[in-house]
Length: 290
Image: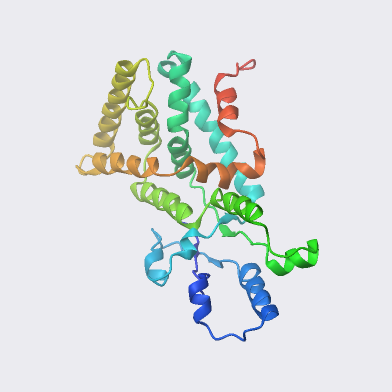
């Protein structure tokens, strides 16, 4: 299953491009026009099972990058957040199931958790064939603020707070990066064993700063990579480049930001709580029932 392709609107939100359009120079008309452009016409989503990878560069005007920076949110947060939560629980359970990980010092476990939970979660999304849709985050218009609050333009401090909040929101460019990674993994069509050993190779990363057992973690990573290579050679004896392509996919996963995953999939659920604190509790909680 591939992602539904998001049809990109050709109307640019850039102020420079908006000024080039012929519009009556009235304040009320401009306010209403901005309101219309901000609240209407969310990205339409169409199904296309033959699309393997997004190519936004071909679908957008080359002289406009505002669409990539535009904040987005899940179109179906209830269902998608539930699926993402299930994947996250499975990710933590995978870590806890490895004796070689559980026997590491607590500080090293936390360091590896902080470094690897996003790529491991992304691998889980790929393994579960998770598909999600996004839409534009509506922006409060000046007219709405005037009518509802009886106030004029925001102060500089209020504007800075709004801009800061907007910067923390997921962007279409970030979602595109994640989807590209998932599509590459789906193209590889990994087996459960390949996923398991790839997760192990990503979890035991000796390059994480501050580790006290770097030599041991390095040996564990090499062991996971050797096991992965053996599985690849067994399942795909005629594909000599498959192992290299799988390892290359891990570098793409490392580029997916924690901020994107947290804000897109989990902020609607956890509110202002610190997600890493919750992950740490999940990792070290004792299983009282088998």
